[in-house]
Image: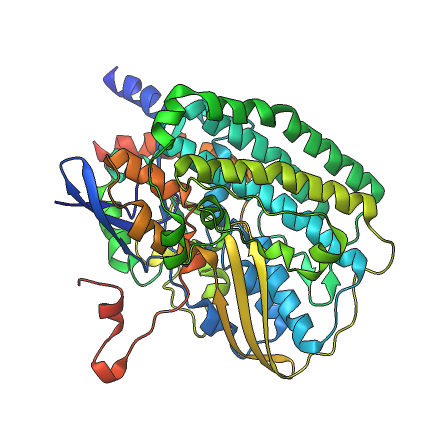
Length: 149
Length: 375
C-alpha cells in the first residue's frame, strides 16, 4: 500500500536539477525554453530548480571541463536516491567538437557517473528533451526506488 | 561575511561563482570566480581550415551563436579583401536582428525570474518563441544555425519566408507594448529595479562596459552605426539611457526590440536580388573585425596562413560586462536578492567569456593555481 502510494507520488512529481559542466550553453537555453508556455514542462509534473539536494533527475549539459572533474561526482553523491542522470546534447556524450587536440575537456560524463538517458543533438530540440525525460524518468525512478528498499 | 553563490544556483543558467562580501544583508563588495566553462576553443581552432573554425566559432556561445559565425565569416572576408554579395548581407542583417530580439527577451526574462516576477518571465519566454520560430524558418535551426559561410550565406530565402517572418514580428508587437507597460508602471517592479545596482557614466567607462549595459549608463556607442551595411542602407540610431540602474538596463533592452523589428522590416523591403554566395580565395595576413553582438562589441582577431588559421583571438562583451558588474554594480546593493537580480541584468554569458587561461610556467604556476582547484 505504502509502496504503491510512493510510486504514484514519485511518478507524478519529478524535480530536475540542471548542471552545466562547460558547454556552449545552447542546451541550457533550450531547457529554459521548455519552461515557456508553449512547451510547459510543469503540466507533466516536472519542476526545474537547480538544487541537487532535492532533485530526482540531473540534467547534464556540457563537456566536463577541468573544474568539474571532482565536482561532478560530488554533486552526484548529494542527490538523494532514487536518482537518474540524463545527458543533454552531444557534449556530455562524446565531448562534441571540444574533444580534440587542444581542447581542455574530459568527456564523456559516463566516465565519472552512471548515465541513464542520453539525448543527442547540438542542441536537441526542446520537444526531444521533454520526450526523453518523460520516456525515461517516471519508470526509472519507480524501479530504482523499489531497488533501494 | 563572504556569501558564495553558485556555481549551481537557481538564479543562474550557467556555472559561475559569485562571492558576495556582506555585512548583514548589505552587499559591500563582490568577487567573481571564473573557469567553469573553459574549453580551450581558441587553441582547438589553430591550424584548422575555416570550414572547421566557423563551426567552432558558433559554439563559443549558444545564446548569441549567430553573431560569432557572422563575425568570423566577415573577418575572413576582410582578410581576403572581398565582401559578400548585397543580398547575403541583407539576409545576415535580418538574422542578426532576429537573434538580438530573442537574446534580449531571454535576458529580460532571466531578470524577471531573478526578481521573482514569474508572470513576466513566462510572457517573455512565450514572446521569444515567435522569434525562435522566425529564425528556424529562415535558417533551419533554432540555436546553432550553421548558416553563415565565408563569402555569403548557405541558403536563399523566398518571399513566402519573408511574409511569414513579418507575420511573426506582428505577433511579437501585438503583446509587446502591454508587457513593457506592466514592467514600466508596476509599483513593485519599480521598487525592485529603480535605483538598484547603479553604475554611473564614469564607472561604465572605467569598467569598459559595452552593449546595452554600457548604453544604459550613458555610453552612446553602438557598433552597428559603423558597420558598412548598416551605415549605407539602414536608418539607425543607438538607444541609450542615463540612469544606469537595473530599470534602465532592462528598458534599454526592451527599447532595442522595436528598433530591431524596424530594421528587419527595412531589410525585407529593400532586399536586392542576386547571388547569396561568392567564391573566396583566402589571403594570408592579419585581420580584425568588430560587430555588435546582443551583449555588446565582439572582436575577432585572426591571422591566416593560406587556408589555415594560424592564430585567433576572440574578445567577447561579457567579460567586460561581468567585470564591471562585480566592481561597480554590486557595490553597496541593499540586499542579497537584489544582488542576484543585478547580476542577472548584466546579462552574463559565461560560455562567451571563458576561452583563455594563461599559465606562467616561469613563475611556477600550474593549471591548478589558475582555476583555484583544491584537490
